[in-house]
Image (cartoon, rainbow, N blue to C red; front, top):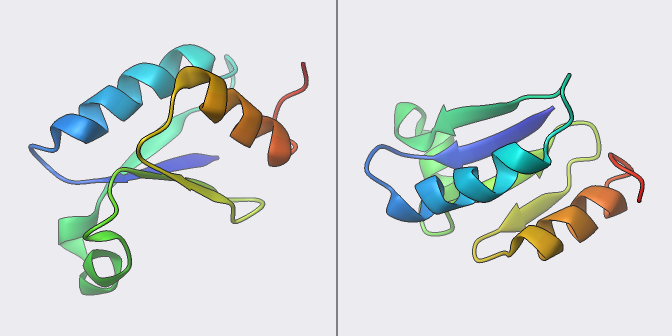
Amino acid sequence: MIVLYSTLGCHLCDEAIAIIHPLLKQDETCTVVDIAEEDALVESYGTRIPVVKHERSGGEIGWPFTADEFVVWLEQQHWIER
């Protein structure tokens, strides 16, 4: 599972979602987590959002990233193959 750490009104997070969604497999989803709902998340991600985390590998990619960079990151997480 892919998690996008975000918060309400984050225009960069909207840009990240626009990159991520077209690249997901049909059976995969991207769960958006609002960091404002948990102090620990604010502490970890407050100055770095949007951040995408691959739950299985624990790998993260922070903004800014392009679609190509996101695909390379997914490959590194052993999530997709070219």
